[in-house]
Amino acid sequence: MSVEFATRHASTLEWVAPPQLSDLLTQSAALHKHLCPRQVLGARIGLYAAELLGLELPQTGKRLLTLVETDGCFADGVSVASGCWMGRRTMRLIDYGKVAATFVDTQTGRAFRIWPNPAARSTAPDYAPTAASRWHAYLAAYQVMPAAALLLAQPVELALDVQAIISRPGLRVVCAQCGEEIINEREVVRQGIILCRACADAAYYRGLRNPCE
Image 1 (cartoon, rainbow, N blue to C red):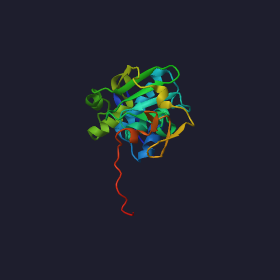
Image 2: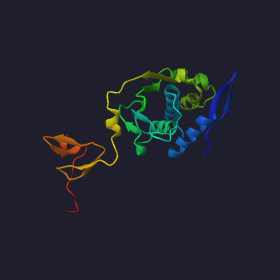
Image 3: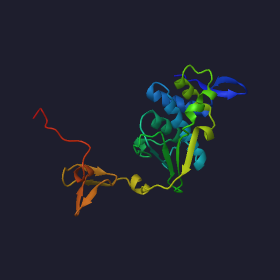
């Protein structure tokens, strides 16, 4: 699918395709069959993380770990720019309902949390004066606004154990109560008994009687 991108040149507005961002947004849009402002924010945040951490992204290995604070379109934008994916265990959802992400260099321990500047919504029309609507202004402006105007970033230290999140391959145990297999060291040990988290604490689901029984 073709996607147009806006960039400001002198006093006019020209529609061109910044190569790196264009490619990333085309990938993200293909996942959703559309492009939206949150995908753009995700991609821009991922590109900014590369700049702040001095890493070449999107990564092909697993050096970078990303913690996103919401799911949906935003997370896919972050993924295509960073190379971090749930399926590769290099992305984790910490659901705060915020368009924000923390990027952790697992080799150095350096980490940055990045989120949109709240003022970006009000300044977006200045970067896309011919946009058909406020939504279209966000879509165009978020692609061309300087990172310093669009995004905020803060170096952080994780309260979580990165190595515990990553875990080690090949580790498997069985829950003593339900008999299900547990991977990635997510078991809980209570009085020497190995339990899954659903059995050890409140599960996110309740079992119902099977109507076919």
